[in-house]
Amino acid sequence: MSEPVKNNVTWFNFTTLWFGAAISVAEILAGGLLAPLGFKMGALAIILGHIVGTTLLVLGGIIGTNERIPALVSTRISFGQYGSYVFSILNVLQLLGWTAVMIIAGARSVNQITKLLWSFDNITIWSLVIGAFVLVWVWLGKDSGWKKANHIAVILLFLLTLVLSVLIFRNHDLFSKQVTGEMTFGSALELAVVMPLSWLPLISDYTRFAKTKHGGAGGSWLGYFFGSSWMYIIGLGAAIIASDPDPSAMLLAANLGMVALGIIVLATVTTTFLDAYSAGVTLLNIFPKLNEKKIALIMTAIGTGLAIIVNIEQYQDFLYAIGSVFAPLFAILLTDYFLFKNKTIQKDLLINWAALIFCIIGTILYYQFIKFDFFFGSTIPVMLLISILYSLTWRLTKTWKYVRKS
Image 1 (cartoon, rainbow, N blue to C red):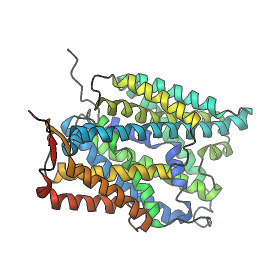
Image 2 (cartoon, rainbow, N blue to C red):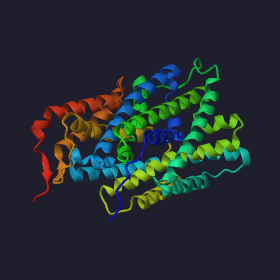
Image 3 (cartoon, rainbow, N blue to C red):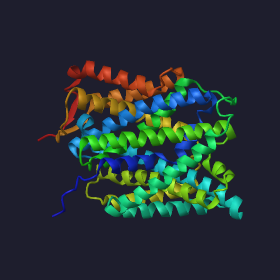
Image 4 (tube, helix red, strand yellow):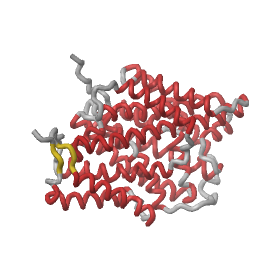
């Protein structure tokens, strides 16, 4: 008989977990995309977008804490068992993509450092090294040793953010320098919203172990909001000042050679761990007898391989693809759970056709709003529209379900 799951993860654990997750080269590079707006408007888009995105993220996490289920299992509430399988497969694909993006982004930054320090230039080797570190982190798992290691990592990463902030904000050109390129406020807002949204299919994998609902929600919100907003602003500032958001350049300019090497690797590992681990948890929704740690190790290995053979650093379209699927999906789930108080997984429900149809409509609308370049971005109006449409038609479509025959 297996041991009962211990729901003992505290407010502090969640704060450090999500702060560490947010501190990554990928988030800094995403912030750099907003540079054409200038610092003041770019920072405003970052803050507003993260308030919305992180709040949506935490609402999804509350479901995990209340029901003690992983994120993709919770989608069975609205979409049924087979419906959740579809989203599980999509989530595994996006997590593999994120694993590869994180590893290659970190490897390129590290390679910049070693090329200057020791004339060692081999991105493939560094991808393998970072992948190996992620494997070790996954192997440690969620035990007490991992918690201690994560706390130490977050302290070091916090020091990194301070160093990078000083390097950026001491430059007097930050608020006045003109930046080439074009970007509207709506596009910038969307890029800020969609990053926390990309964690929605993962957050309950961790908040299901929360000691209290307030601890899981509050710690997750604070950790991710401040960590991710900070990373975006650092990337924004670096892109404005140096026309290059890659943090390795700034760290080298500050003569932090070996220190820079260590913190770039650490920042990459702490974030990539969450992607790889949640890929394992997601597959358990389809194959419950699998071992989540072993699957996470396999996912890390596959993601490392993808980082070496596939060029996927241009991830703006990748972020949009994530938002197009998971924005309408969670609009429906959150509406069901919090508005209609539908909190039970119906074991005989295989597919809720109405929910799936609205999710497809939402995906189409998402790309239309991107074309319109709406002031509020795409995620916010799409989630509101799908929630309203789903609410208005709920009674008419409640029989559009495929259920298991007894």
